[in-house]
Image 1: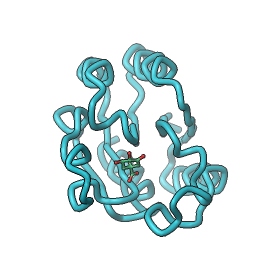
Image 2: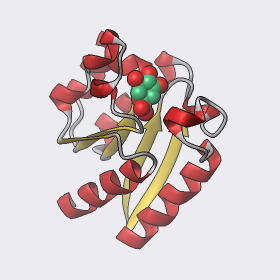
Image 3: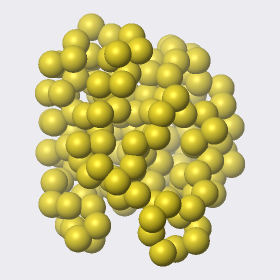
Length: 144
Ligand code: DQA
């Protein structure tokens, strides 16, 4: 089975409790289980990780670049300003799908309207809730 890494950035560990009106009621543990199940149905071996530490996400992206592993990335707030994540995504060697649970482009805060990930993404899926992760895995399975 082809390996896929689902990488979630800051504050996504509190999914289910964090602003459920925006991000829904599914917890990160439930999301991780769903991603593994969706992956298995698509013939993908999915590993889900979440971190609140930017350097850890950079290490994971570097690891994925070395191993040419496709990525589903929700860099959360780092999406909007981390040039280190821009550089890490630039050197990826397998496809990257950018996911956001909400649609940052439709949210009132100006800072959410920029993404450092999008220039490197094969596809961007936003505003689809948790199902966006399933759609991203489907896209990677189709590209496999
Ligand atoms: C998010 C959107 C970002 O603007 C925000 O900072 C997040 C989550 C999303 O999944 O909708 O933390 O990436």
